Image (cartoon, rainbow, N blue to C red; front, side):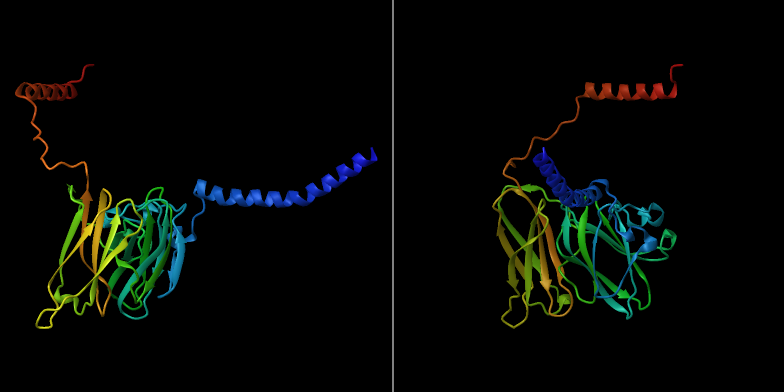
Length: 322
């Protein structure tokens, strides 16, 4: 009996030592995962009154997880279909000197593909009637990108609204800088019709307004991928008179069907990189060389029946049965 009592006592002592550790692990696991599941882990600048003040060249690390929208502080008529408000947060910066600045967004890690959205504006916080939108960008990917802001005024506060898509929580880094980082962020081109050829040829020109350009970078991203990959560096060619050639081309070979976004970026000697060409290419092995049969409209008797039913529905709405 005494031996059993000693064994039980030692067991209780061991349990008392390990019980706090186990409880701590359980609470830590619950805290982290419950924040993700319930959507309560939101940054303080989810509220515009607690917007984060940025200094130029300062990098802010943030997340859209759990953020909401202060509908009284935004006006969808100002941005139209440029962005979709779902889980936004607010930043503010005031340049000390006038000039050109860049909003660099990098390090994106999202559950979906499309990345974050950015609106830059002036005005009184949470008074949409005073807002003036300077830039509105929907990134569409998780590439490192920059948004150019020209002719900013010294001493003028600027508001930055960063938003994620519905149920697509993102981590990201944001920096207001005098130097661009990544690819230029511009609106995407319209989709392309499916093609059966796996060969893609891009054509573009070197405009005089670009100044001195040593080479172009060709980037490609499949629609389901999060980031673009560099496909080639195309050097600027010289004419017999020593000037820069005007026309350029690049041919790529696709290994698998899909929708591919191509972007050609000019690396200027002075100034930021410039997007000179972008297009979608849809490669499908299901497409056929022959055109599909022309869709015929309904026969006259069917068309007459549809018109009669339409008139009947209209009459029932005007004279409902009581």
